[in-house]
Length: 269
Image 1 (cartoon, rainbow, N blue to C red):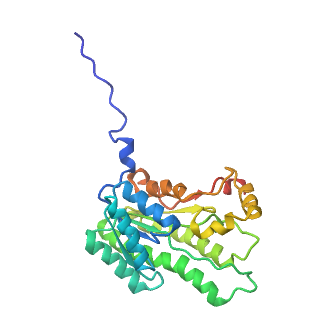
Image 2 (image 1 turned 90 degrees about the vertical axis):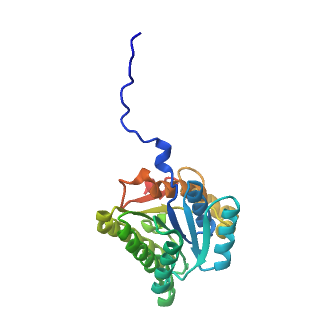
Image 3 (image 1 turned 90 degrees about the horizontal axis):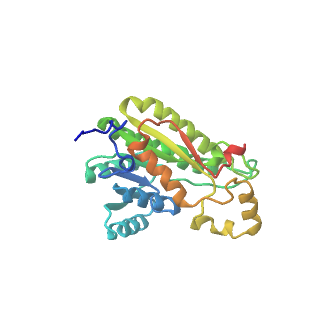
C-alpha cells in the first residue's frame, strides 16, 4: 500500500480564530448607547471581557448586568471624557480589575447643529472637547498602558462627515471628526513600534433610538437613502463586524486606516 501525504497548508491558523477575542480585555467608552451597546455585545460574543463606560453609572451598570446575565464577563462604570484625571482613573480601574487593557473602543460623541454664522464658541468647544479632545485623552491613557504591554488595539468611531461637507449646520461636528481621523493616523504612526494598532470606523447614518424621529420623516428618509448606493441606512450590526475585525488578530497588519462603513456614500464623491 502506497502512503501519501498531503502538501502543507500555506498557514496553520484557522480563519475563524483570527476573529476571536478570547480573554482579551476591552474598554468600550459610550458602550451602552445605540451603537455602543451593539459593539459591547459583539466583543463579548467573541470572547472579550468588556468594561462598559459612559456618563451614566446607572445605564452602564444596567447594560453590564444584561451581559453578565447571559454569561458574559462585563462591568459598568462612569467617567467624564473631558476630564484628564477621570479618564486616567477609568483606564486604571479596568487594569485593576482585569490586569491589562487590550482593546479600546471610543464610541463617545456629540453634535450641536447650528449654522456656522450662529454657532457660539461655547457650542464649538462642547463638540470639539468631546469628539476630539476626549478621543485624545482616552487614546493617551489607554496608550500608556498598551505601551507597557507592547500590544494593543484602538478603534475610534468617526463619521462619513469627517470628509464630506453637508448643507446644514455641521461645522463643529465635521471638523471635530476630521481632526479625529488625522489623530488616528498620527497615533498609529507613533505607536506602531509598540505593536499598537490605531484605526477608525466612519459610518453614515445609523438606525438607533436617538435618530428614530428623523427616519420617521418620509421626506428626510427618502432623501437620505437616495444618496446611499446600497439603498438603506446603516444598522448598529453594520459597525459591529468592522469593530471586531479591528480588535481581532485578523487586523494585526492594519493600522492608521479609516474604514468608511457608509453603504457606498464616499464612493460617489
